[in-house]
Image (cartoon, rainbow, N blue to C red; front, side, top):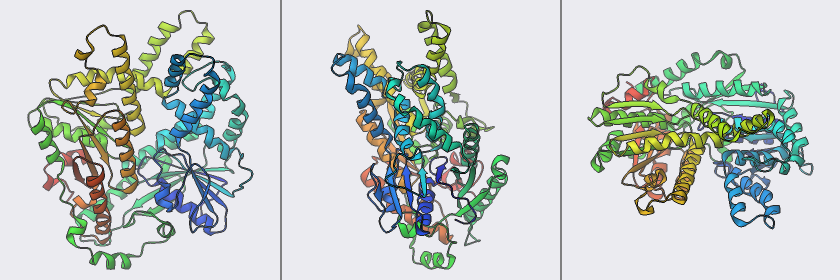
Length: 593
């Protein structure tokens, strides 16, 4: 594959929506076509390998249609977690009463349980337990960066805990259930750290936030000993029609982002993949990934595209704000979705537009990456707008100290150390953040409160935490239950809360957003609307490649309208630095000239 070294294990990692699945699949197909026996593994809870490979991929190793040397498997973290819970609880069913079993099951329902269970599955392939099916190369299509890093941190983070706490229990369950796999975990760590065995492909779009995330991932992986890293820039756009002002600006912005990317990334070996006029679904399109674009073919196809085939007429951000105000002059507004879809920007823009119209608005974020402050920058804020952030790390540390004061009083120093270690988990962070989050919810009785939530996995955990709190309040109160309204009940109340699902109008993000909506429905929560962000069909373009991408998008927007959303709004692509400033202007000014 060009001049890139191929090792037995290859990991693709990067911010959500940068194209990890596409590039991992294309690499797998290319290597298989060259005669190598290849296994492609997805550990992404929102994997769409089935659509990309046009093969029914499951949790069993499956041959890929029309690619003789390629097999694929999807590790579903949620299914793995459920199986793990059942393994832990099965020996206890005849020993403990049902309420105790249920309590343990609840304790094993957090993010850390899901991760350790998924890693248990993941480890089989790296440690070489699948001796009956040898492969020259195993490629991992990993989940978005935060999940990936936690997944890879597990061997180091939990090995001491397993060794020093053999009969204990934590959010990963009785550690004795993992003891039999400890030797295998050590083997996995050694292979991940071996430069001759493992390569990390850092995938990024040529935009500033994705490059920052790639740089952060690179540092954290390097600290874990995974230092054999390569940078893949995906979706670099070269205009075909140089008279298209949007196309020119889009390229200029990408070039500026690449010029200003962190030095760590500049020093890496790189491979650039062009933006293509279509979504990479199907083997034929995957085989073209390592080939140059055929501009003549793109021009010919573009000439047959009618205006109505590549332009949508959906309401925009102004339409959304109009509808919110028409419904009520206060309430809770939350943006939700996968990492990288623009939740932070949409939340900030909605808040600023409401405030510009004279309504008091409080804007806050639970986003662990603190993107919100970066987007607001030095902008002049309306007097009616207040802004703050729920800092997950700060809330977590306060919570840990509180628990240590309560539970660590009679413990030895070693026991306190183990207790603190046990509390250093994503589960603890979600519980701690909720305490601050619940206070924000109540402010919406008097004004608009806009909350920029964290990426999808965090968001679901946050709502799950809210639901658990709701049950705890009802169980322990002496008040009339009909008069109590907990934060969870506010989220379920469509007159009080408007949940906005943000998605990029591409196949994978739509699939992921639909799964998020399904999880919300199971929680008794109905989203108010969907927002198609970075919509090319809502952007005036003449460039042939961009017109084709816009045309590919139109049927996807129709799918959202007909199958998923009560309401749908579209936000155009904005190719400049000051995206938030552009968003809060009128539609006519939103596209960079």
